[in-house]
Length: 411
Image 1 (cartoon, rainbow, N blue to C red):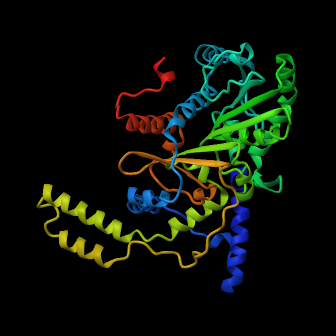
Image 2: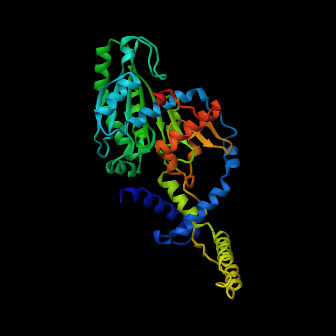
Image 3: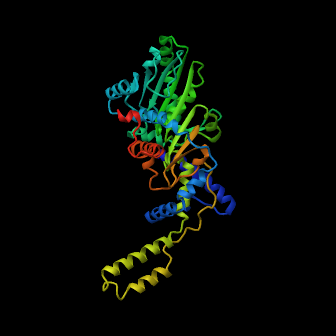
């Protein structure tokens, strides 16, 4: 019910507008239903249309990504992955061993609006030594702190994901469920950050917030809140962040928020508007030519292995398939589409398969204004099969070394 509330609201507004223009009264009963062949053949069509050549053209006017940033992004991705650990001991040990950081706070439990997360302090910024992390500075007057927010892992995280209402926020709009999570993090830890700063004797905290999926969204909101404090210098790095902020609000965060999107990752593109548009697109697609071709090939294949089985019926079957429509397109599918309200936040880095290898471009948040229906749309959202894989492929291509490993992974 929570997941469909805003979708239904968009549907009703959309149908009312269509009713005015068409002169007919449209209700939710007029909306198309989808059958498995609708989705299967739409996927086939999208794979055919959105080929590597199309992807290269989509990106040709956007600035490329500096490959030298990849070591830093990979360190941050490993920290985002660490948030999914099953125990606080594992987090603490890994922080000390691999990142020279000391755990300051850890909450392994998550409830709706209160995500699991941890906070760590860079020991070298206290001891005035060179940091093991490339994204930490060497400024002796700055205390280096990281907050890492876990993404979707439990059923309560899914509940937060599904609260897709747009809520007014800072002159724009924001994902309702994630807004609550981010504000909770900022409010809860403002006092802790000030105590850490006072105890360190430093002048300022450089806070890096990191997260994947839901964690990226909550980290972004927390960063927007904490960035208003004069003693805080905030940077946010998110991987696969959901559609979170309205366009203007997203653009206002470009100076301190970076969202990395792995190729076909569906989550940065998913909102109630894009889901509705995808349903209408799939329902309006006539897959008859695809299905007829499949039937003809199947009949020919069967007759080649069993010549006598279809001897008297093969041509009749083929003629019938050729002459009959296999699908009736609903007549009441609107031609207009809903304009999305929410987009991924900040400066968006899109890493994608270009037909030759992996390319990367800095694109506007509006680049992700529709769902990219693709067989990898879920795989590309995961850390291991999505982000880690595309990072490694990019660097192995760059170094021309099929065995390349990031330094932290070598350890």
